[in-house]
Image 1 (cartoon, rainbow, N blue to C red):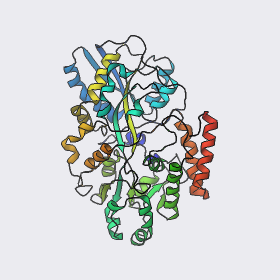
Image 2 (cartoon, one colour):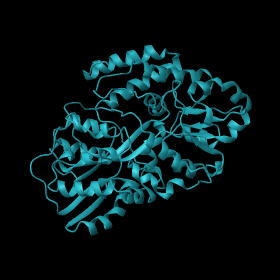
Image 3 (cartoon, rainbow, N blue to C red):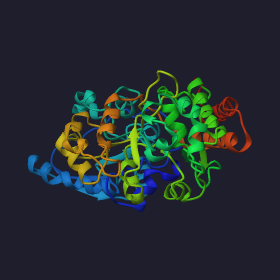
Image 4 (cartoon, rainbow, N blue to C red):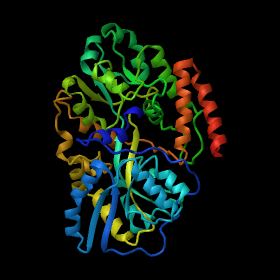
Length: 447
């Protein structure tokens, strides 16, 4: 949920598996990046890496082994802070790359905007052999790091497959097994039985008034389960499409069935969770450790299952967000920077050491053979939740194009969802109106 974004969690806590903030959103458009600037192929010297919080600490753990295996290259990992890193990268790219770090940690909602607004600002990693690793990462991520020219401008580091966390004790009271619920329609059909057994308990919490911020993570995940989003991979607006309308309709049906609690306010969702008022948390991999640390008194009650599909026979996996490492095209040490990126992100030992140190859920498929993924968790009743997320990641998902206009879309879709919650708005009508407004604001076509 947006009010429980990874960005906010990392500012509040440095513990465990908290994944990295994808950041806010960049309101820019233009052409995709066209490749690295001339020169800058030095493979020695000191490489500066920009990241933040637990991710920066995890990257530092890789440095000793890398420097030993790559004599002549030193690595300086800097914790720029979040959201400060986005301002610094944006300012640096706008200044033609002046003052940028050599390696940049970038979220999926910023990368497309950087490529669109600052063509040539990020190095063309295909020139250094990045394409050889295309099949090594979770399916659905490579299009995210690929420019319109077909070249790779980053390597995936983190992936966040969607999970379906649920309170086993509440569902047991109702005689419902969430693991066999194939669709959200199945869950809605069981609403009366669930509520009768659990008075005062809701399934999920959403800030219905979007106070203080847009709360669209759940809606977006329903879109992504169908391979849809606000934009298609060509950048056309798809807000009025059948999958998007179906997603918002599902939200409305859950609301009409009395299954959604209002989570308005800075701590709205957390307060509902702390009070034991929510039975489901449709959240991605980064939340696994967060729930355990934030709500320890609920240990043993939670379980994890595959998310229900939106349509019968539909996908039950979605990659809701990701983060990546890119190289600044202005770097005089691009080759050395690439060597570090490749070393950190394409070796199971590297990504798993970062994960174990409190970093992020890795996008490298080969990493999932590590023993940590099969470790049982007492909080989840002995379930190996990381193995479940590894399986969901391996299943893959459709690529999501946040584009350079995500911020504009976010505001319009938030307004549309609020109209449904507070004014009984028709999902198709409000989304089609949002699509028209977005087209007017951005000049993008409607797909």
